[in-house]
Amino acid sequence: QVQLVESGGGLVQVGGSLRLSCAASGRSFSSYAVAWFCRAPGKEREFVAAISRTGVLTYYADFVKGRFTISRDNAKNTVFLRMNSLKSDDTAVYYCATTSYGSPYNDLMKYDYWGQGTQVTVSS
Image (cartoon, rainbow, N blue to C red; front, side, top):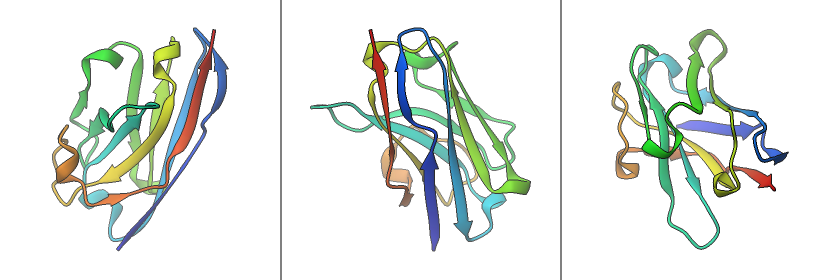
């Protein structure tokens, strides 16, 4: 079992920044890759970014490349998503998820544990 708790969401203006955190408990955190997904109003959940179990490999959706950075601190069992240059289209609920694989994937079907999500609202 893995428990994931996201935090750091909130209301920010266009062009602003946020840092989301995903705190994990349960099975060995450093054994699995972690990803962020988002779900905007009226849309399906979509991939944002993923990081390998060691943090060496990262993978980003095209719409966040150059703006978002995923990182992890295995000593603190936490994964972060730094979000810069936010746009109104980034407004969504952001979820972190883990997979039993060590490598990062963009396929949500490969992720078996999910957090409850944190709301990010970008206002113009």
